[in-house]
Image 1 (cartoon, rainbow, N blue to C red):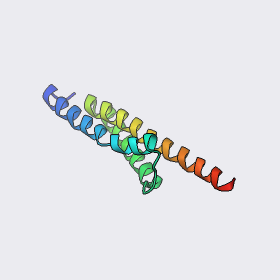
Image 2 (image 1 turned 30 degrees about the vertical axis):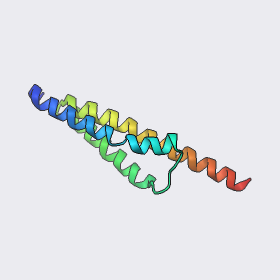
Image 3 (image 1 turned 180 degrees about the vertical axis):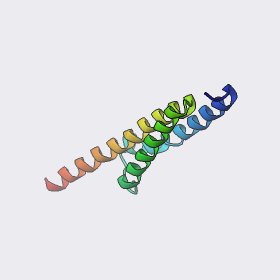
Length: 95
């Protein structure tokens, strides 16, 4: 495991990365807006974060593990919210 100060820097970076997604979550879940969100892009980001998580486990980096687990949760919340909104719109369009 890396030195403590290195892990702290990684945890701070990971925390900022998670906070950066809050406006997107608010748009999707609170304001119920999903225009301009590419599920393809979010899916690729999910795969990339999953690989970074595996890497973090392999190199035993607590910062990488924690940051990627929480960022994956945030990304999945956006994906689930967008799919929910788009499904609802499709049902309303058929009615």
